Amino acid sequence: MKFRSFLKFAALLTGFLGSAAAEAAEPPARYWHSFSGNGNAVAGASRLFVFGGDSGSPTYMNLNDLWYYRADIRQWTLAPTGKTKPSARHGVGWACGGGQCVAASGGAAGALKETWLYSESQGAWSQLNCRRYYCPAARWYSVMAYDPLRGQFVLFGGEQSPNLFLNDTHTLAGGRWAARNPTNNPPPRFVAAAAFAQAPVNMVVLYGGAYLQVVDNMGTFAARCDMWAWNGTTWLSISMAVDPSAGAGPCLENPNMVWDASTGDLLVTGGFALINGREIPNQDAWRFKFSTATSGKWSKDVGEFWYCASAVRPGAAMAFDASSGAKVFFGGFAKFPQTVAVADTTYCY
Image (cartoon, rainbow, N blue to C red; front, side, top):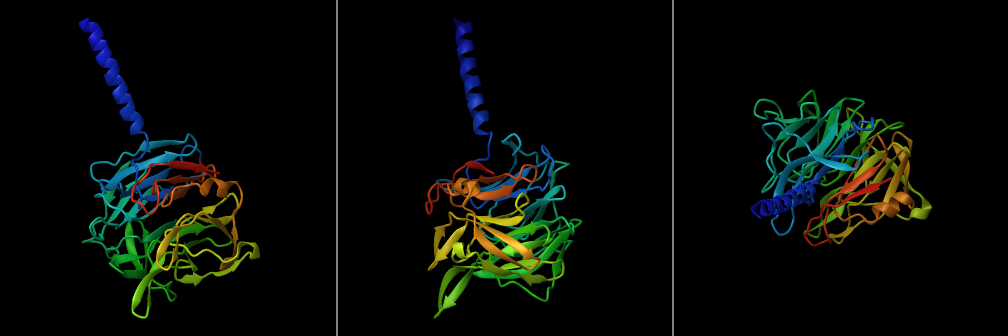
């Protein structure tokens, strides 16, 4: 009888541990997180890394776990991180490429002046000594992208303190930051999007974001509608037309944007339109096709991808899997503007 009781207890324990393992098989629910593919086009070597964010109601805990998703087997894995790692935070400037991911600043109670590098090969974090080496000023909700042509990470803008938005540019290569002084600067913004666009562009492209619009001494948040490209020295303004069937082009804060190599255009989804300062979740999918390095046209995606992406949770982040062409979404809000986070993963072609 005692042996049977032990077996029953062992079975229950095994079931419990199995349930716990199943629950730990994907990142916990979050929003305001960072999500980026590593750009590796080899199946099995492509990784989509998610870091940080906020757990939402009821705990509102900032997070500092690092996970990666393999689109070829549709599986999440908790990444090894070594002996040290960044503190919990959200609103991180984040990009992956060249065998590493870079986490720039972000914050919890306020913006931080920190840079952390994650090495894929070593499976470990290392912190850049910002007392010894130059680092960008404290900020959160900046935007960053990896430029494989120039071998550098490009960081732009963000929020330094409440309602103080930046338009400075920094590049990181060889583990060191450099402040750049371009002749042309995009206007200040935070929660923008950036991605490296292949030929005919071959530059990091910046789009959207939000800023504080002041009219009659009253401040209201408004979305940026402009697009810029970083040529390694300065920012170039992109001339944008809109397909007549699409109506007006998109103006979005916190959008998702990736270069879709399968179609040769920028793909923009998610984010929010700002109507009189009120955030309205965007359920459209847009494509920007370049005709030259500095001009192109917007059109709405009304195909299979839009059908998939239109059902994604507000606030979900998207990453591009270079090996398969899949677009993967993770996290977001259960029902905007409520503050309940979700752990949904959506795979779209």
